Length: 127
Length: 127
DNA sequence: CGGCATCCGTATTGATACTG
DNA sequence: CAGTATCAATACGGATGCCG
Image (cartoon, rainbow over all chains, first blue to last red; front, side):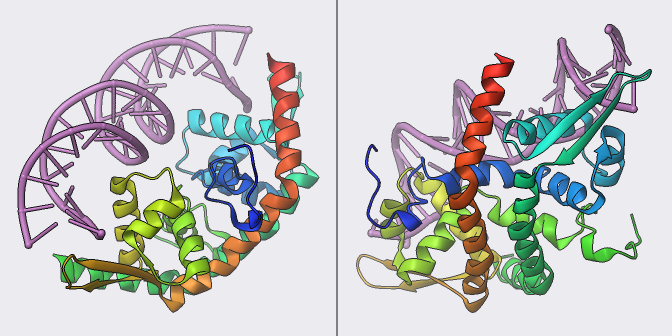
């Protein structure tokens, strides 16, 4: 595990591969939604995100935001007013991630109907 | 929750959105690895996948393969020899998914170093 | 060989209540 | 408003053993 194979371009099979950690990040159900939301709206407050993403609990949202902040994908800005105001905004790094995510999104929109159909057939034949 | 917002292009915030289900599929730790592996090697046997992906248990591999088969992303072919031979191969649908995944992969290779750096800083400042 | 079924410990998730 | 703390439910993942 101390050497990188020659075809390192696709060594996603090694646990140390960046791809693996990326999946840990954006594979997260909420993380990508947060990124897309911030990508669309720009800067957003905690409550705005909470409303917009509807279905996420505060806990998960907080946890997700912390993770993304840790990864340098967004910045958290606290305005010490009363009450406190906290804004989240994508960093350039976060913005750059928007692009591959959009590709996924496009694939989803183009092909998920097929996936759904396949599932129905599979479930019918299996049942 | 019974109506689709006008800007449905980005309604990934609705639980019913395809994007959401896509994440359920490829957000899976192993699923994307299986897809990439099959994309590279073409047809593979269960044991080959098992070796190639190293780290996955039979249970998880089986579960992942079933899911992908259900989603119509790959085909499972059983050759009733003795012993049985089972091959997995991407469908055209599965192949098409390879493309967005590659984009993610490229992003990872280009930017994960930054993410790692951000993490170190964050952890240092937080500790 | 290629699974599936079961058990079991752990990690994630989410609802709820409470705080600065 | 923006969290934190706590607890309960669930999903995940691995080890083991059996089957076609």
